[in-house]
Image 1: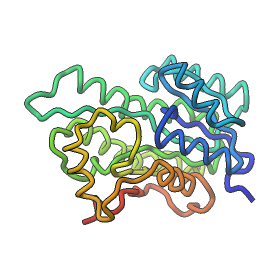
Image 2: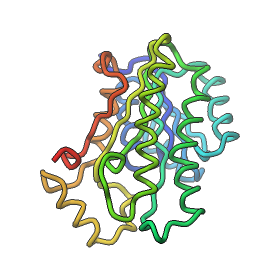
Image 3: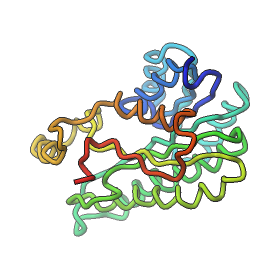
Image 4: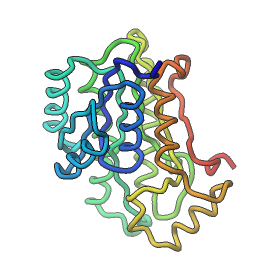
Length: 243
């Protein structure tokens, strides 16, 4: 039997990479999925790639008005949520001496503020016993040069989870962080090859992860297979942050 049969899932930032792979897998496993992305044309392309049991809603996860519109759509179409993968995020490289106010605000507005309100605004629709997954990063647990703002934003998500599981325990809603390592996705296209090579050297198996490897981990956290997993951080990093 499919692991998410009859479930309704919301995945933010799902127009490419890890979140798109997750949306595809969730549908294969029986879920009906709502996906978001900032650019309507990219959302439409992702909906076409997923193929069935999916609705795309263009919007910015850092915009409360856009989040309201997302959940109004979910309420109208399905009336419930069983799984939320708050995946939308951003990051920029800048050493401490070069960080700007604009860069800080962009990163924290989406990664921290956006994640908080993505979860908060979903709760009225959430079924008791559901699963919330935040998209973290190994950067939240280890030092990386010129990546301090991003790292701090991801560390904040780990702190959220520790509190939110207590806030939601009476409803049986589990909250976990999925923390990828270096994954071969389109977001890496602008990263200099020399920097990517250094990242790959940190991975014990010697190769980057694939989006599908994140998707299977997200499926585990979304499904009943992880029924006794709550408040955890699941590293899917090939061991990078563990050695």
